[in-house]
Length: 105
Image (cartoon, rainbow, N blue to C red; front, side, top):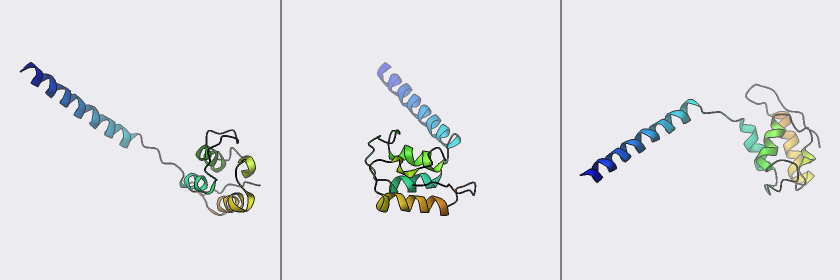
């Protein structure tokens, strides 16, 4: 009988904590700029870290937020395949606040 009570207690605790996790994920959800994902897909995707960032997604985040002004910070990409489309995309696509980002090669 003691094992049954312990199992029910653990089940109740697991359900309660799961509900808290779901509640916190809803309350503290942060929207990410959709341009970050698009720019990340345009980068080569090798996640080499040669640009000084942990991976292509972090470099894309820095480009979209204006922390990096040159797309050529990516050492693995090619100008015609990767960089020109990124420059054009960021010049023509406004973010959630309505501003565009000016980056150069």
